[in-house]
Length: 162
Image (cartoon, rainbow, N blue to C red):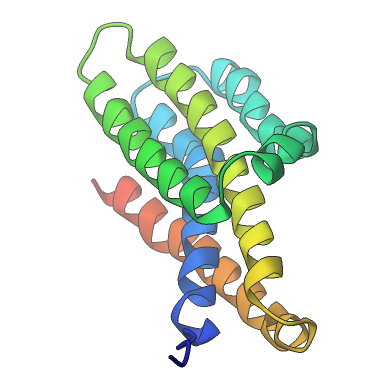
């Protein structure tokens, strides 16, 4: 029986677009919604600056992602976990101590998103031949940048208007 392969065009753009959205929500959009919720600029700057850390130190747990389970399972699990984190953030905004709860959830989400990036890059390397990797390197960068534009433009505008 002939094995049918899926075209990289069906998964590379979406994998990398979905990689950029949490990054922008956690590191950029969170600053705007905290400002709209009346949090002091000093507190916003202090606490949200730590949210970049998981992407800086993700090399320390990348071997765990590479060793345990499959990249597909890591991708699915991290997407579901990110969905739960974003839902919890939305729910926490109704609580009196929303700043602490939402900030803790954003921190967890940052680690989940960085883990998703590790799994996505690993899947990219496993699923594509070196020639395909060379061809799709620009596509994956474009997809990620489109997510940044979407998050920085559309999501920020929604918050500014709302």
